[in-house]
Length: 313
Picture 1 (cartoon, rainbow, N blue to C red):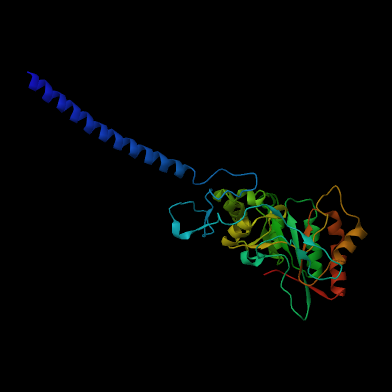
Picture 2 (cartoon, helix red, strand yellow):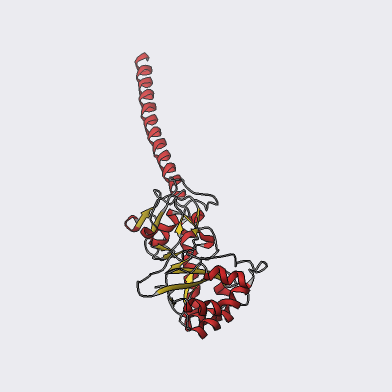
C-alpha cells in the first residue's frame, strides 16, 4: 500500500511540472503578442501641436505621392527621424542695395538639398522678378488683380488652400485659362512641422488640394508649395520634397495681409520698389485692397527700372 502511495505522489509531481512548463510557455507567447500589438498600435501617433523632436515616433513617408499607409511596404519608405523638426519661421534680412537678401544665419542645412527656394532663376543679361500671390480666402480683389495681370501681360503663381478652391472655382479656372500657375498652400493652412508625426495628415494637406484642383480644372496641379505662415522645419522640407514638391519661400513681403490694416498707397509703392532685386520672388496677398490698387503702377515702374516679370518653372 505504501508503494502505491509513493508512486501516485511521483505521478502527481511530474504532471504538475509538465503543466507548469506548458503554462509558462503560453505566458511568454501572450506577452510577446501583446508587445507586438502595442507597437503596431503606435505606428502612426496622434497629431502633435508642438515642436516634434521625438525620434521615437514613426516618421516614415511613402515616396509615392498617393496616400498609402501600408507599414509593411519597407522598400518605398524613408525614415525622417534624424531630421530636425524644430519649427522655424521664414525670414530674410532686407538691404538697400537691390541685391538678394541674406536669410536665417542659424540654419544648419542647405535649402537646396530639399528643393526649397526663396529667389528665382537669374541670368546676366536681364533682371527678373517672380510675382506670387497667397490665397487663403477671397476678399473680392482677385478678379481685378487678374484684369491687371492680363492687361500688363504678366503671369503669376497663385498659392491656394482647399477652402479657396471650394469657394472660388470660377476664379481658379480663370487663373489657369490665362496662363497662371495655381500652387498648393495646403488643405487647412496649418504649421507643417506640427503634422510630421502623422503621415496621413501630412500627405492629406497636399493631396486634398490636388484633388479639388483636378475636379475644377481636369488638370494635375503643378507641384509648387508655399508653407502656411512661413513655418517649416528640416523634416517638413524633406517630406515635402519627397512628395515631389518645390517649396517656394520669398525674398520680399510686407505688411499687406490684414484687410482691416491696409498700408497707405505711397508707403506700399516705396516699400515694394525700394526692395526689388534680380530674381526676387515677391509675396503679395490678394486680400489686399492696396495691392490691387497699385499693382499696375508697380509693374510699370519695375519695367522702367529694367526688370522683366517671369513665371516660376
